[in-house]
Length: 486
Ligand code: GLN
Image (cartoon, rainbow, N blue to C red; front, top):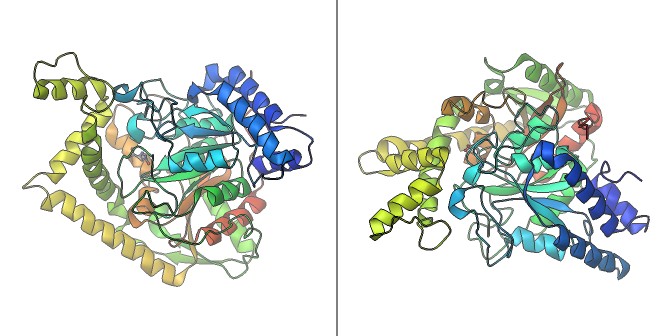
């Protein structure tokens, strides 16, 4: 039986029927990883032995009837999520040998559910980037075209799912790092409402924007994984105290009468014509299902990218201050006094993009510039949030392209930070407003590259967002998976 091309829930069904064991599933994935990793480079650490042990444990849970909805299903983890005694590097020299003394809350949940962890995935250094080109381990490749980027920063997780090296993966999204790579690799990715999933154990980039979320082959698998991840955690002060919702149960409801907003600002000049046509087809498909399509304006969207790159860099400059050679990781040999040691440690340990952000953020927060930059960005953030509040009085969800273009080539944007930042133009607003957003495949371009369509919903309306995505997925049909020759 070919296991790697099945969805997580299909595999779960086979496990329940005892047609396959979790060990067999993990073995099939490890074999696939061995075959395609030399081409794709999704993983930076593999945890084969532990995954097999965990698979045996999962098989026992299934036998003992203590299994839950994803028991026995393997998963890949972005390398900025702390895993007990398994290297967690953020793909940065400064913590390249860091062995966390604890698990992130999401990792605890995954372990308790009996999901074997296959390994840690590649990413842009400290999650700053849109292509994985800033990773110290070299970039991941887009399985649809190995000359193109898989997106970023969670590019390794997305590439792993698209290349069928894992049925599920975890990423983090600060300004688009789950949705953009999901779009570029033709899979599903969700950025949950801020506060829905605990950030405890996620190495912080910009704390008021960061959220952890799932990557999956389809909407149902993503809904099942989000159900597992969500929930209050007293270790994260921004975690919301909420009752648990089963997002999977809720799928498949009629969308007749659903009000779908189309923000005009997201279809402006500069968007690739094939991205536009694929997304417009998605909108038409929802209309055919009985949804009401309403044109909407989000007038402050044009300032989102500027506001994002001030808020995110300001917070990063503060969060990354802890990497000083005293408490973690790399420490420079130039240590004749503490200031010299700090300076050299950080100069040697961080890559150029991380340094750029620390400098930018420190500048935006510094006395004399705070009001002009940081404070203004916060005010803009409020206006962006108010745009959504107004829009959601008229519509239930919003639909847009996820990215302005399909996957770009290596080297195309990494010499020009602004060109790279522009690939986040449609994703950062959701982080600034704290609302949920997701990307799912809308189709393929004539060159055979995936295009993503993005759905926004009001805070904590993941159920409506996922139900809309489920309907859309049915209408569009699967775009399939890349024919990666091995
Ligand atoms: N690409 C964006 C950035 O570079 C988003 C990153 C993210 O979401 N982690 O900041």
